[in-house]
Image 1 (tube, rainbow, N blue to C red):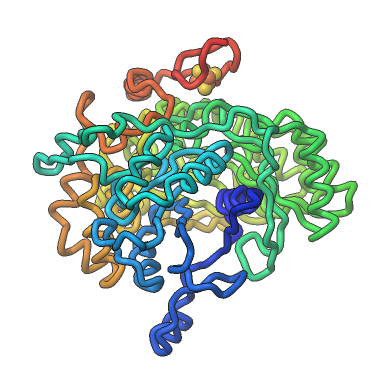
Image 2 (tube, rainbow, N blue to C red; image 1 turned 45 degrees about the vertical axis):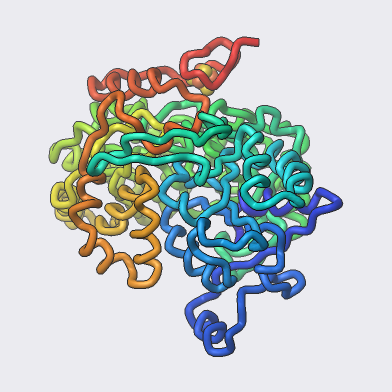
Amino acid sequence: MTNLGFQAAYNLFNLMPECVCERAFLPDADELEEHARTSTPLFSYESQTPASEFDIVAFSLPFEEDYPNIPRLLNLIGIPVNSSQRPSLSPLVMAGGVAVSLNPLPVAGFFDLFLIGEAEGAIEPFVEAHKAASRLLRLDALRELDRLKYVFIPSLYDYSYDGATLKGMSPKPGAKARVVASKNLNLDAYPIPRSFIVTPESEFKGAYLAEIERGCPRGCRFCAAGFLYLPPRWRDAVSVKDTIRRGVETTGKAGLVGTAVSEYPWIKETIEAGIEAGGTMTLSSLRLDMLDAGLVGLLKKAGYQTVTLAPEAGSGRLRNVINKCVTDADIMEAARLVAEAGFLKMKLYFLIGLPTETDGDAAAIVELVSAMKGVMKRGGITLSVNPFIPKPAIPFQWAAFEDAKVIEGRLSIIKRGLSRVSGVIIKSMSVKDAFVQAYISRADPRAGAIIAEASEAGWRPTVRKYAGFMEGSVYRGREKDELLPWDVIDHGLKRQYLWKEYQKGLCGKTTPPCDVGACLRCGVCVAS
Ligand code: SF4
């Protein structure tokens, strides 16, 4: 409900005078029982209209974990789960969001169409095209919408398979060969994505969130958001500060959102604006080599409670592999600044199962965190240690997911090693959940049947049933030139560049950050 991407799309639809967009959510388990008992279909919050009566049912899908909820919601609405079985008068069912913009294929069978990429600049032409096509028969209307370069209509392609791999994906006559992800290169041309719904009952507990920047210049090779949102773009400082002031005046608490908020050139004055307006501030994780005494002091003044940093790997060698490019000295300096400013809580993100990782790298996490705890004598450190999941559209898209037993082994090295250090808590995503996400992230349309089964039976029995098939995908490194399910999407990144970055990573060679205006290397920026 608080997701800014979803709220931005909701606002953009409603800014069009001829368009009314209302919200509906998957009910909680007890409410679902009530829906079933009373045969009540899903209806909208705003006008209590049954969702099936809208022209379009649009899903916002930021995370792969949401996918089993798609069949649940469609059943609740009363729309056939498979797009091929929908009658011609059924609403169009579409999806957008980060997860499907990376790879829409795993859920291709559930949707009539996808809007790939960023919503600004895509929604208005889509609504216009939909209006013009609404008198046509369903298939003809979809063909009309296919003219928009960022619309992906999965039923307009033929798919063929060879064992675990997708062998072919060819457009049917008249359909376009590639879908170009929509990108809003001028953030200031559109309203700042910000909270329209603020409630203590949701994530971020009543904070007014605003997106201050998009894209990260650093090129960490494991990070899907980092590559998907290239190039880095900053919003105008004056309107950002105005928005934050308004937010603080309304709710008393503002949250700065972005792919890399600490890279925002006006981050300090933005925090100051929130403080001057009398509110507290919250930020997503901070780039640790961007911290200095001034920024840490401001965060303290802004009521920031837990400093969240992301070393990602314990050894300098592995940080070079992933292009994190921070040294042990940088990390220790950040810990010192945080401790000296009087913070009592620090959260650290680490990944395990990264390409080329060894048990020694896991032991290096123990050493590093022990040293940081030595600096941060008062208070505690919480580690979030999660398995690395190879995602589409990143240099590591070709890498295999690490064997579950190896991941468990590395996790126990970290847990055992840090059990002797007081004030350190370790949290970790379950390896089984990571395995499922690793399968879905890079899957082809055959995943749809597995997801539909999981939506009824749950993931554990479904994974047992399809273990061989899923393992064949999850544990397999991809060939350099093999067809990848998301190859149909042009994310703007040159495949050759991503492969070169992967190879550089395996050798531990680093790449400097973006130099927007002077650099054309990845394909996203074009010569002006
Ligand atoms: S072309 Fe260069 S500056 Fe532009 S997004 Fe790619 S790496 Fe960054």
